[in-house]
Amino acid sequence: MANPFDQFDSTGAAPRVIFDPRKAAAEQRAQNVDERAAANADRQVTAMDRQNENSKVTNVLKVANDYNGDPTVKAYRVAIGQFAQALNTGDGPQSDLALTYAFAKAMDPESVVRDSEQNMVVESQPWFQATVEKVKKQFGMDGAGNFTPEARDALRQQIANSVNQRQRIYDTRRTYYEQLAENFGIDPAVVIGAHDKEPFLNDIESFYQRVNQPKKQEGPQTAQADGKPLDVTVTDDSGNYQNSYLGQGMSGVN
Image (tube, rainbow, N blue to C red):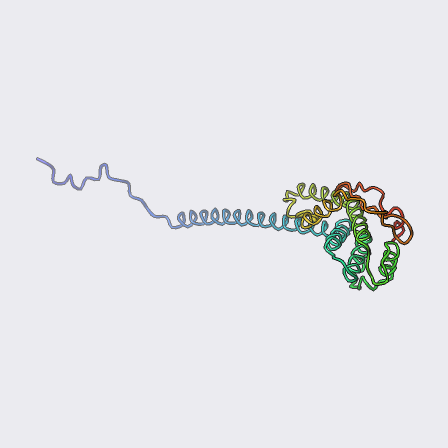
């Protein structure tokens, strides 16, 4: 017969747990410390990431500003832009004056940059007016303000020659800034962008093709007022121009 008092026997029962509020508080404080430390670590990582990103943006802006402010780059941009304008002038006094202006600016882009940055009107500067008058005389502008077709192409050829000479230095500067960007871990395209000649490639190619087409000789070669023949031979896009008229009479333009 079972002992009725066995039900009160505590043998094998789970030990009684006594709640210690001080120990629980200490454990909670330790947990809070760990959570705060983890949060601080996350914030530090985020701050470092943000700082690195800001530093990268700063580097991008600095290198890009240095590139865009490079005197060689600024001068080339003026020269290639004026070359494009010269290629798109037509016939007649107004067009020939525009061609003359483009020539003067393309041959001395540093002065154009300087005067523009000083908010001066380039066309009113003495150096510019002197160059324009010399071009008119050397390339035989007539009393009505017209050049001959040969003179127009000779002017454009001289601009092409100057631009291509400048492009060699410009390309060197592009390479320098490209490498500098890569050293900073920056995509060079973000810094230097497309080549400044790219928008005008079609016009330039059309000019070369037209000028280099074989022409039938009809009568004596056209000569300028000073008796020197105009040669509009363009060999290629590398600056290798033969018998340039600039070398015959315009090298003193400045």
